[in-house]
Amino acid sequence: MSSLKTSGLRKLNSIPFSLSEFIDSLDEDKRQLLRLECEVMGKSWLKILKDEITAPYFIALKRYLWNAGVKGPDDTPKSCKIYPPAKDIYAWSRTPLGKVKVVIIGQDPYHGPGQAQGLCFSVPVGVRIPPSLVNIYAELRAEYPKFEPPKHGNLTAWASNGVLLLNTCLTVHAHEAGSHSNKGWEQFTDKVVDVSPDTNGIGRGVVFLAWGSWAMKRVAKLNKTKHLILTSAHPSPLSANRGFFGNGHFKAANEWLESKYGPDAQVDWCNLTPVV
Image (cartoon, rainbow, N blue to C red; front, top):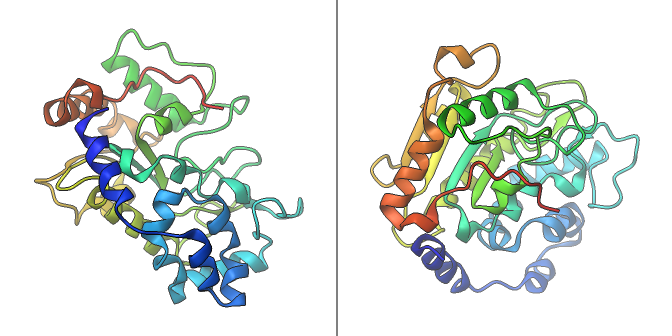
């Protein structure tokens, strides 16, 4: 295990947290509204974000989603047209906070049926690979010629390898891109961006891949001495030729991680075998 992971886990484990005590501390209204977070959010994240999810802005966001049909992980009605499914809204948090070494920031979930799975740029196996991800695969192959782009767009292998795949907004209305912007998600995910490097290790930096102006805005305030912050155009077909292709980010991330934490800290970008 790399020194990045070791120090991060040690620090996280030293933070006291009891899920049952947290739930008991909530009034009945918040207990109902936050059932999803308490049941599906990764515990390493929940212990750090517990005060954030009880903040007034987040409770207002949850009330909006509740009225739209997003409730517990298993009781979202089929008529609900909010993506991704409730159980996957926090899929990104399955990458334990103490193991995060690279953060990739997207905008909002895919808004077509069956596409969004709670990880930016990723879609379930069997769903057509989105154009932006096709371009990500093309850049990856340019940097690692032995990489063979898979026939799927599932990026869970990256997530299990310490890559936090975070959208700025975590939900979207069907067929309406950006429909849940300015409802509170941006404030919440800004907090996620803030704590992901500050809590994963004592004085340890991570890599941020910020593609497009939206992502660049999210990382602008981060410590550029402590972290490696790589920016470029977005991989969308509308902008990929304006600086995404040829950015060299995948190799640059691994070179920096190896120089800081040793060879074991590198991300196996070429392994995209889906994690079940």
